[in-house]
Image (tube, rainbow over all chains, first blue to last red):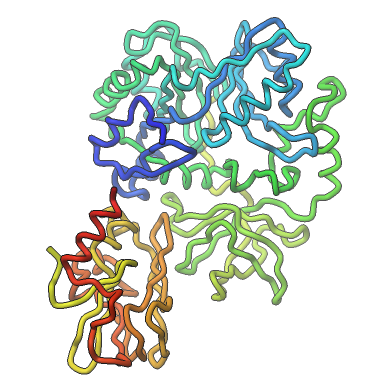
Length: 366
Length: 134
């Protein structure tokens, strides 16, 4: 199992460690529900160094990204970020990712579990282009601050960038804990305001410690993957392997904003497949809530009048709403707010209700 | 050391003689695996109806935490005579006192002796847990 540069920090904090995407990662430091609430009310600190980080370089870097990604890289302004899928020819995604448009080249952040395959896939499609893909994952660390106090805490250790004017899904470079030219993006996977930082691997622990010190008085808390998962579910954000996979139709998953199916984007890997999959839509990803005691879990089936009408993609106990929530693919026609369905938990039925995603939305900073 | 007055399973249940009947519960290790010391992270416990007949090793219920669901497996065969309704309402009891107040079901066992080879005493259970951590 791979270890991030922060591994010893997690162990020292007494985190419960689990395998995730080939990495030994903190599931939780304390209560998952308390960690979730800390992110919503103050600020959480995350080690995301397991995520794959690639630099696409060369004259045709943008063209390569546009060949394999569903979003339109050439149209992304320098300093902006877009969410995208990476699809097979048939339109089924092999991953989802963030595209950072640098002044020169492109920076990609992908899921840990798909990282090696993504790298092979992108390289395989570079034929004829003056572009190469460098895997910088091992050489770097990635931390996130998420929550309403994030800016205040990050600003305390940051120079040479105005965080107040850095808008959502934009990035810049500043001096963090003395490290010049640190990539800082206003992004995250919790639905809260916050930042993601990209650092040299050897500096990860020092920056973690400085952020911890700067945030101590403001309630900064380390957050594990357990809380991260339910926070992203509350925010209605897809997780590869749950809402997106090679077996699921991405046109049902509410990720249309990642698909640039415009004439100017031109052809790309998976375009024809995605267009064909649009005609095969039979369900739609929605939220479900249940007042019953059982928590919806991936694979649970949904019924209405005895007929199977959907399947749960993700589920959890919502720290913000205090009820059990899930995301589910529900047959078209029943995918409407308030529709009453039954959740099947190993043969026992529990009432649940369709809700539009997201369950939680903050007012984004302009 | 865990109580010596009962036997343990490799799926982290315990069984203890109580008069003509047996009490069945889960171990501190099982609770820790589910909620990592955060009793508020336990969300649900599903126990069988009294009167149900259960085979040794059969799943008789489920316990759920914020992050996982675990089966409850019967250490011995028998018929359920009573369930601990207090636990269903107050899951924190499992974290505070899994050995006494945290019992889950009472059964009329098919055979009295807790001598099946797959049942472990406290020392063997301890050794099993230690080995499974490595």
